[in-house]
Each structure stands twice: as structure tokens, then as C-alpha cells.
Image 1 (cartoon, helix red, strand yellow):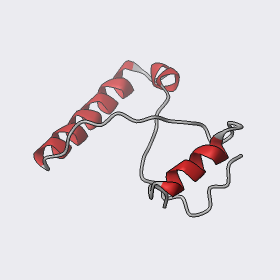
Image 2: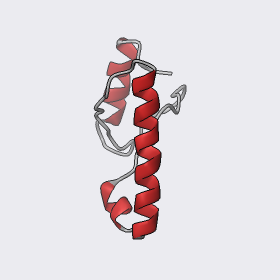
Image 3: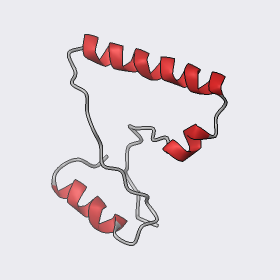
Length: 75
């Protein structure tokens, strides 16, 4: 597991396989929440972003952490 000391928890990630296990009602509710978040971001002038996600237990996670630190994207 990567050394996550100082990492800020800024994002929530939901795995699509986990979402597929939800009931129809839960998926609809989640969809409404996501739509509202997108509306709020756009109202604030923010663009739609796409993210790269890695699991912290991957053997290369510490290398990614170091890259993020070098570029000022840690914490």
C-alpha cells in the first residue's frame, strides 16, 4: 500500500460494477445527485473534468505519489 501521508481526500470514486449492483431506485437517485453536482459546477464556470484513478495498493502507487508531489498536486 502506498504511503498516503499528507494526502487530501478531495474526491469520491464509485466503481461502475458497484453501481450496477444498486436497485433501479438507487441508481435513479444517484443519477439525480450527479446531475445536480454537474449543474452546480457549470454554474460556477467549471469545466467537466476527467480523472485518472489508481488503487493505492498497486505496486506503482508510490511512484505516482512522488510524481504528484513533484508537480505540487499532493495534499
